[in-house]
Length: 226
Length: 81
Image 1 (tube, rainbow over the protein chains, first blue to last red):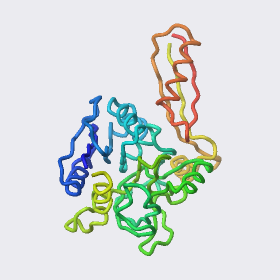
Image 2: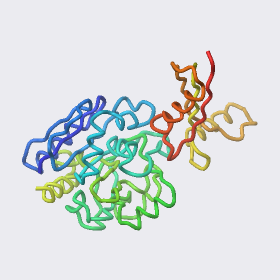
Image 3: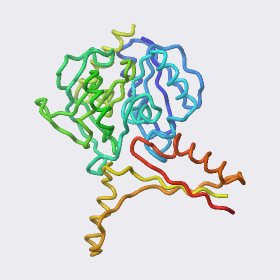
Image 4: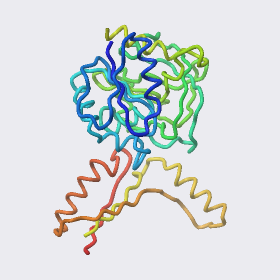
């Protein structure tokens, strides 16, 4: 699997993501600057977490209109898998690749801690490394992670098996750290080739970091896209 | 001319910041506050002299960037001079 990580001014998870992708794919990962208009021919484009453009106007709003994003949108529309994590998820919604919006957390506080997620679908390359219904521990670190969309879209997401992850507790029971509708932590686009998620799998991708539940996502991608 | 743009959350979209401000006003003793909605004010200097053209352009700016119409609405005021 060849992968590219998009880097914006203010990205801060780009190198962690690169490392996680390199370890699973065994190959080098291209770093693509936000001002570039071309992206190398890759099997996966990853949009990392951070605070692109200082979160000016709205989280992800400026990055969604940066030169490189036009190419990300074009590749996504051609079917290239695109993974957006945290700020990357915010950027993909602002760019119109995913429905809804990430609002301010219901409790108004920045939340930085490990949470539990239930894997809701394994039909996408991003989640095929997990079991359906598996509970995994992955950290979140965000102020704007409160997923909002209208009732019709919410129904469609659930009906079309496009909810990838929901927040839960350690036993898989209901939990909701940020007020997201339907406890949504990650969603897929209609075609299933774009995933946006607020939690950071790249931050628990090595036992030395205190956990490795994120590895299966990158291993699954490498298996699916190699 | 100038455009003055107000961007606020749509009715029905929870505004936790507005709610927190309302509570703070209450605790300061302002008893008559029934609700607070927080938003953004954006002032744009424009080169155009035709107000109708200016409004059309700013309308497009709001749709494409200044507001996220999933949750926000906007109002535009064009001011001469």
